[in-house]
Length: 259
Image (cartoon, rainbow, N blue to C red; front, side):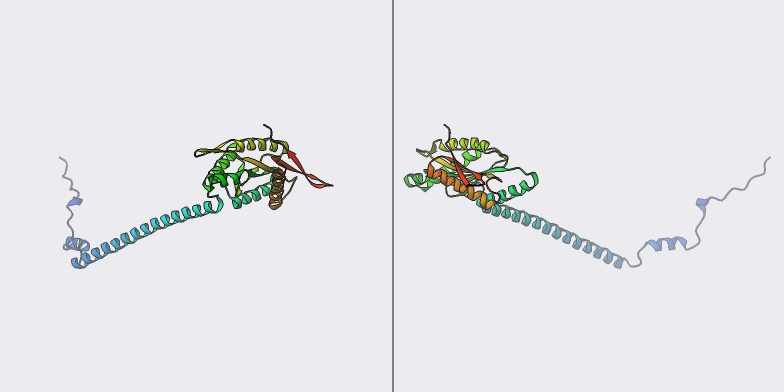
């Protein structure tokens, strides 16, 4: 018969020293319940203040975004007002001269020439005199839209003032090509304009200047095209293009529009 072995002590049954359990509970229990409640309420108050501050900051950010959007919208309207013709919606003289300046700057990089057209409407004064300025305004809108439609997407049409328009053709490097485009524009302008119950007809005198053959600055290029247009108008020739002659200086070549 085997001798009885001593049982190992049950660890779970080990009793704590007297007072140890009470000490354990007292370590977790608040010594002053009222102070703990006050501390908790203060923490909640701080959290509420933080949430209120966050809410105010969020609203301030929304207000700032809204103000920025309004400012950008006003700036866009101001820019459009400054650079667009109020009647036709086309770029105005300032916008066109900025675009022409940029085009000349591009020439320094790609060394590619381009064409400038100065278009003046013949018979426009008679429309104003016979049918009133409102009819003249409608005619200007029609002609402006026709010029845009007759050209390509990369070309620029601007109302330069009164019944004058300018067209920038950045991809046209040969005068012969420019003359073909001008004849197309002249046919478009010459089509009848229906204004209310009346139909009016206008025609165009066009001056043509090539960059850099005829001029190499904004002011000179516009002046050359303008003078060519005035020559075309006085000669009733439709189109006049400038050609540089080293001996005789500036000469004018009249080009009759083809039917």
